Length: 263
Ligand code: KIV
Image (cartoon, rainbow, N blue to C red; front, side, top):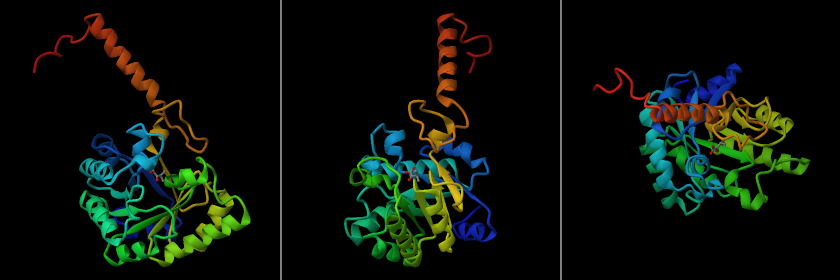
């Protein structure tokens, strides 16, 4: 996948879209050499990189710096930047300033959480040439309203409301919608009702694609393992072993060895 319009082609062809989060240039350089379709510079960076307890702490400046770093590392990937908490709620002018910063930092598209109150901005952005990805369900910026990180759209009315919002986002020009932590059958219903692709996280297998936080996929934090996030390695243990190996070698005067101290 090379461009945003490829998202539509993938859905039409029934080929799943792959997406992971990334926040820094070194990791982006590795991802640039993989077949992953797209990279989300998620506001989850406030949690997994900066150590906050929610994404509410992400700022435009933070997202701008991470987006620019990821673009430098992954020049060939489709990059979606996350609009941080309240950055798109301060009126059209303030919002478009934030949008311009993230697009100039290297994003190909931007993601905004929720539908209500965002339609005018989304329409303006799309008309202005900014591809917009929607995000419904367990939208982490609303964690205080939800009373925690909880599955959303569990009953019929809530599922119908989510479907209506998804249709409204499509109508306003979104090229894709993330569906986070909603029942699989609701995600399937929404996916079937839309022409644009859905990207699921914790929402079952029937969406048009999947996104995972890279740190969860790599197992960088064994204290945090959401049930839906499959761990493909235990990076925390591997890093621990590597650093302990280095410390042992230094203490034993085994490092540096022959050939490791000449420039
Ligand atoms: O910020 C993020 O990482 C996200 C994904 C979990 C979809 O929004």
